[in-house]
Image 1: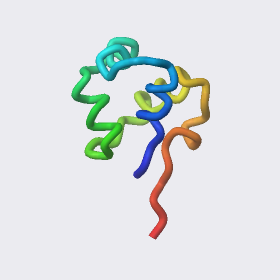
Image 2: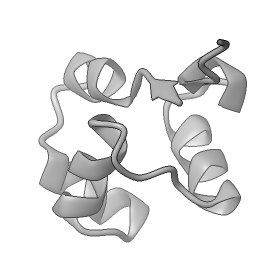
Image 3: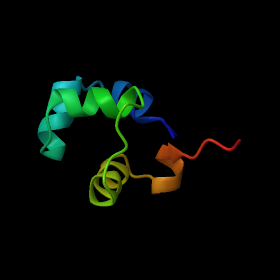
Image 4: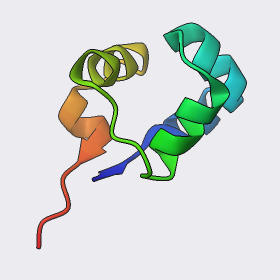
Length: 65
C-alpha cells in the first residue's frame, strides 16, 4: 500500500516527531508508515486522514497488480 503521508507532512512543515506527537505515536511509527513498512490500523489511518483534512482514500492507495 502506498501513501502520501510524507508529502502531506512536509507540506505542513512538520517533522516525523511532530506528527507522531499529534497522532499519539512514535516518530518511528510515522517513519514506518511513510516508507510502507507498516500499514496503520484503521483508527490511526482515519486520524491521519482527518488531521490532513482528506479522505482515507486520498491518503492511502492500494497497489493494484
